[in-house]
Image 1 (tube, rainbow, N blue to C red):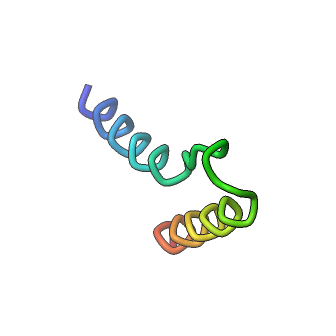
Image 2: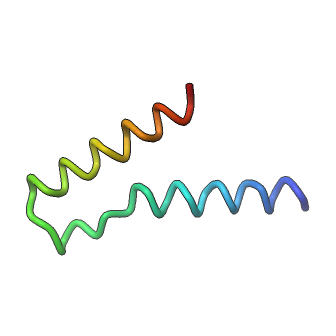
Length: 46
């Protein structure tokens, strides 16, 4: 149960970073936000 809670917590943080609601922003802004989120995730993983 404890590992499930940990997984859910991590999943929520990742989902919030990567879920950008594509239909609300233009393509260039979306790409910039995705790149920033990916760079932050890669920094976190190292």
